[in-house]
Each structure stands twice: as structure tokens, then as C-alpha cells.
Length: 399
Ligand code: AMP
Image (cartoon, rainbow, N blue to C red; front, side):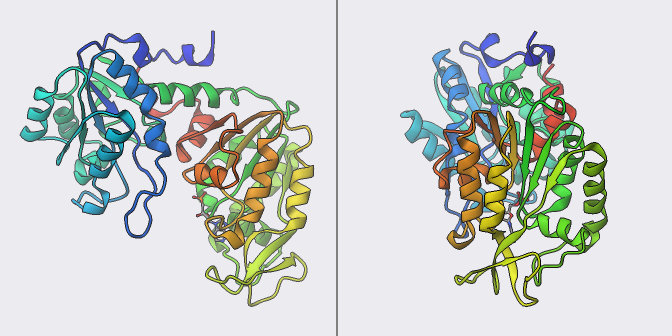
């Protein structure tokens, strides 16, 4: 029995959906630039298999998602209307949009929907009840579903109304095809034991976000390579101070505990030995310094060439890779080299390579290796929590 069968959750392809009102919770929390323009439509593209499956069965498709953190207010920057326009282009058919996600107007739109038509509802988080997992709000949403499908892996670790309270109110429910792929690919990393060549690269900004996964990873991985801003807190735990680099002083003790935990378990925990540094995050001029000669007035913004070389050499023996978070401020060309070089090396491994995290797709695209990874998860926090608990609250309620 495969892992996914043990979950006892049906996929959309096992449900009777013909001509039904199929409410698909998608994760259209796509990246926007400072002007509110969409910078990457990967998360839209990844939901197409589920939507197309529903349309092939002549369903009436209702799409609902959150976008950004509008905090329960109507903020036009976070409207889903532009997403409806993009969907119309990629699906090559009319896609209707309604300016609310609940209420009489939304219900009327849903009632009027004909088989094979698609409706995008407005941002769920324009309603403060969504984040509160409100049963009242969920009941309003439930009025619009004959069938409930969760294809929003990236938000299924949260207990919010559209992924938690709502599915409990609908009889016919299941997972979308993206959710299924996420579970299938991530579950290949479950049950591995030390000695099987399971390595992890963890980067990004915040220590706390990643602690939840590093602790359980310590029980199963052979090697962890740390980079990004969080690595400076780990270096600080070893008494290495890097000028003005970002250190989370209140997390140094946690970093120290993780370093000790790795030692006790024989896990090879690696930290950067050199850095691409600059006066500030806005600088274009960069210099390379080691842990030993790092100047007081500079900040580290990427791993240096010696660290890249060391990490690439240390990929030897890797059979399974979990990558989460960049090695530096990869959004800026001058601080992207470390992440890109390492991503290329990982992508070319003969291994089961999985990357997760909101910006993993942008990074792997930038490195030109997006299609070389076995799987790029649409969920950062969700993928880590799934690997830790082997399920998510949003999956449990689909049973
Ligand atoms: P996370 O969401 O925790 O995976 O963090 C991703 C963010 O960390 C990216 O936007 C990077 O720009 C940022 N980041 C990575 N390395 C550094 C660094 N050395 N200094 C400041 N920010 C960084």
C-alpha cells in the first residue's frame, strides 16, 4: 500500500463530479512586486490539471483562494480579479469573477453557473472570518459546493475556514491533483533512516520558521547544510560574529541546542566558511570575507565561493535532498551566486530532489533548473510540517 492510500482521502478523479458544483480551494497566493503586479504565475499553472479534470467532466467550477495578508479588509491590491483574467487566457475560455466570496450575490453567480463554466470568487481573506476558521463563514461557503476539493497544499497546515471548517460540512470531498502530487512526492522522504543518504539544505531568513523542521530532520538526515541569514545566528552560537550581519540574538540558544543535537546524533551539520559581503543590502559592490577576517562594518548577504565549493563537494552520497530557503538575498544578482551555484549542483544529482518554500520556484527558475528537481513544492511551511507530522490539518478533514 502506498503512503497516499494510507491517508484514506479520495482524489478528485475518484469522485462523481459530472455537472456538479465543484468548489476548488486553490492557493493563488502568488508573488506580487511593490506595485502589486504579478511576478510569477507558477501557482496558477500548477492548479490547471485539477481545473481541466473538472472541466472535462463538465463540472461547474468555483475557485476560491486567499492572496496576501489583507487582514480582513478589502484591499484592491490583493483582489483575485487579475487571476481570473490570467486563468481565462491559459484555459482559453471565459472565466467569471465575482467581487465577493460569500453572500447573496456570490450564491446567485454560483446558481447561474452552467456546466463547463468557471467562476473565481474574491479573496477569502477580505473576510476576517476566514482566518478565524469561523463555522458561520464556512457554512456560507458550503452553500456553494456540491463537491469540495482542496488543491491548496501551501495553506493546508493552517486552520482557516476554507480549508478546515468548510470541508467538515461537505459530504463529497477530496484532494485536487496538485495536492496529490505534493503528498506523493514529499512522502518519499518519509520513513528514511540515517545512512540512506538523506541530506538537507536549509536557508532563508528566520531561524524560528525552520526550527520546526530541523529538529525532526536531525533524527533522519545524514547531513544538513545551512545558509542564508539564519546561518549567522548559528555562527554566533559558535562565537563567530560577522560584523553587521543579521543575527537573531534571542534564537542563539536554540541554534546552539541544534548544533549540539546534531553532534550527539552524528549528523554532519555544516555552516558557511566564507561570505559575499557588502555595506548594506542595497549595495552593488561586494567583497568576499571568511569567518576569521569579517570586518565590523560589513554585512554578509550570500555564501562565499569556498562555502559553495565545500557544499557541492559534500553532496557526494546524496540520495534524497530536501531544500528549503535560499543561501542569500538571491533576489539581487550580486547576492544570488551562492544559491544558484548550489541549486545547479543539486539539480544535477542522481537523487530524489525536493525543494520547498515560497521563493524556491523563483530561485530554481533563476538558476535554470526548475524542471530538473524531482519536485518543487508549492508550500514552504506546509511541506515542512507535512514531513514532520506526515499529515496536515487540511488533509485530515478530507478523510
Ligand atoms: P525564508 O522565507 O525564511 O526562506 O527567507 C527567504 C528570504 O531570506 C529571501 O527573501 C532572502 O532575500 C532572505 N535572505 C537570505 N539570506 C539573507 C541574508 N544573508 N541577509 C538578509 N536576507 C537574507
